[in-house]
Length: 145
Image (cartoon, one colour):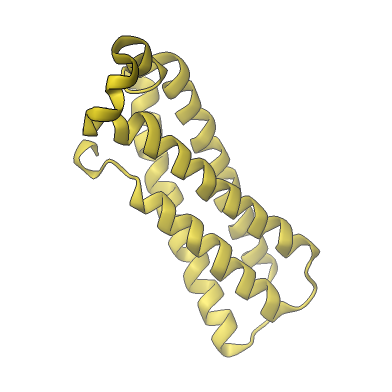
């Protein structure tokens, strides 16, 4: 079961990154060319949001129930988990940084729903989705992909 969820989590990671890059490129192009915020921009932002939330749910199942690097790391090693870099990165840094990143992405999408000006919408996407993507990329265990 752990391996199946881990595979889904790894695969969805690539979807998240690709969608994030597409959304950022479109936002930057829209901002520099002062073009309209299209329905395609809105849908891509929505798919980016949904894929991140799905990734979070799968990650939480791994963290809480299946992974030896999640809550189980604290029950097995106690406070010693903070002294073991590999465990600390997954058990603490990965989960909390990614939750902050997904919160930023959610805020950005919500702000875009309320905004009416195309430039503001492109700027919101670039700032909030960009910061979220940077945080996501900063906590990826690249050696485990």
